[in-house]
Length: 126
Ligand SMILES: [Mg+2]
Image 1 (cartoon, helix red, strand yellow):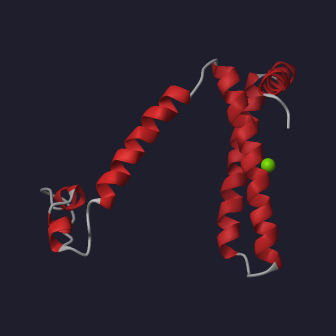
Image 2: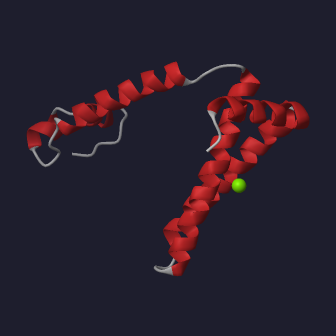
Image 3: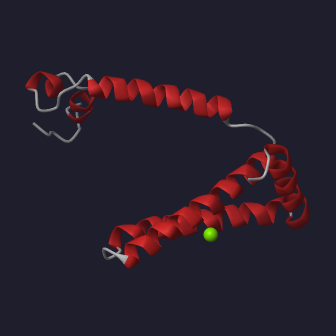
């Protein structure tokens, strides 16, 4: 496995060699390939086809991760703080979710989703 410093140097070299525009286009292309791989894995027949589809998903995740790292280099910043904030919000949502039993009338009646769906002009789901 390549160390973080060498990885960063290599990706910086790629951005300098090919240019920011080309690498942003490549990021979009790789994200589209991952999108396609994810759609395909759900339709794969059990057995060899599924194994190949899952293998392809991993390939595309790696490609996208490499391009995400180059995007951070291009835009000159880290996403660690943003990720931490978003992960904190996700944890709070999951904690709230775990506290609500949707099979329990009390849980559904008191949920924010019900409130949202039943707002004036909203689609009623009762
Ligand atoms: Mg790819």
